[in-house]
Length: 197
Image (cartoon, rainbow, N blue to C red; front, side, top):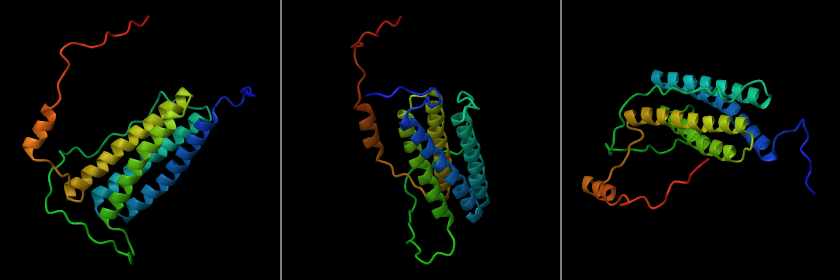
């Protein structure tokens, strides 16, 4: 027997649980990114992490307000990337130091790796949460969160790439071109566009 939805409970269980998970994680990430920024030795990295911690906090506040009905998801915060550099492609004598089991502090490389992975996993989790939402406000908020994670991850990647800590292997040029040229466009459209009234 299906229960009637109560007027004071207009949300599905999946979306409330998803929002709870997303906001709990975002709250922890505010602390994590603040902590990581204080550990960073490189001032550019420190500033980048502080900016991200601030943006995560603002997005957390907006999420709480949306859940409590005092904000609209149409007014989304937008993270503006700070790293405006062309990525360096190819391997340049890559090295990966052994993990330090007796670490008393974190290296900038470790800080970046932790931050980057939090953003990468965040982007997939926020997308998954959004896909479970019926409420358009929650869905828009969560998808904006996934987009924010994507942009923040790219900033961290860019920083690491410029330092040589995240190198991007490439294929031989002829292999790349062969793969690109292997795709063909259809001669004629195979399907008519549906007529929408």
